[in-house]
Image (cartoon, rainbow, N blue to C red; front, side, top):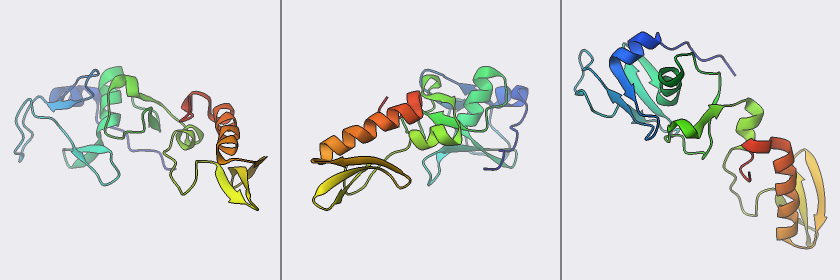
Length: 161
């Protein structure tokens, strides 16, 4: 994964934006040149990926990264995880430094069966494409084996934590 571009200096961000850590909202403090926004307007629009972005001085910036820099005064980590998996929820308590492995543990899982299970020879297998966790009589038993493995593997980043 490539390193994200550094954000503008925190002083410049503070000149243009207010960040409310409780609501996660980023608001304009001043009207940027050639813009229709007004001071106090919520900054950012949702991308197709679900992340919020804001346009400033010719650059698109991800709102969660701007929020991190405004709140800490420091450049954000390479990856920021949204604990609740809602990419537009930028409340401070929902953001945490992440890693590629942590982000895998905290991603939504959908499919035909319960996560980590599939039917095989009238029984239920638990695991991942690369990790065998056993065969079980019911889908629920197989899923519980998967949940226990997931908690061990991903800790606080597990969607089951």
